[in-house]
Length: 114
Image (cartoon, rainbow, N blue to C red; front, side):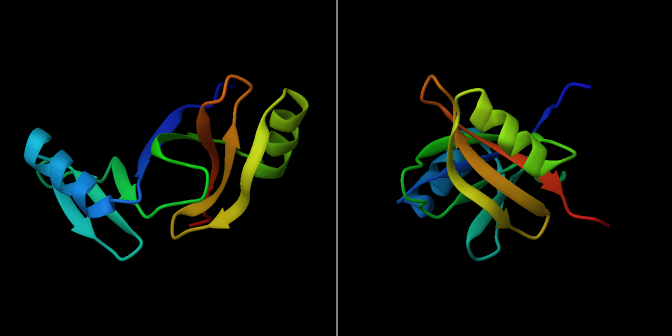
C-alpha cells in the first residue's frame, strides 16, 4: 500500500506575512487557530496551514499519512533520513519530521483515532 500526501504546512518565522501573501495572491481563505492558520478555498475543508517557526525547518512541508508511525520512523532512519522532531501530537494526529537523504524536509503522520 502506498502512502499519499495528505497535508501541507508552510513553516515560517514570519507566519503572518506568509499567510497574508498566500491569501492575497491566491485568494485562499484563512482561519487562525493559534499556533497555525488553516488555508482553505471558498469554504472547503482546509488543505494546508501556515505555522509558527520550528528550529531547522522553513518553507513548505508535505505530510505523508502512515498507519504505523513508529515503524515508518524506524524505516526512514534505516533508509538514511534524519529525524528532526519525533511524535509531535496535534489536534488531528501525531507527526514526525524527517530530512530525507537529499536534504528535503517532510513529515510522516498518523491520524488521531476518531
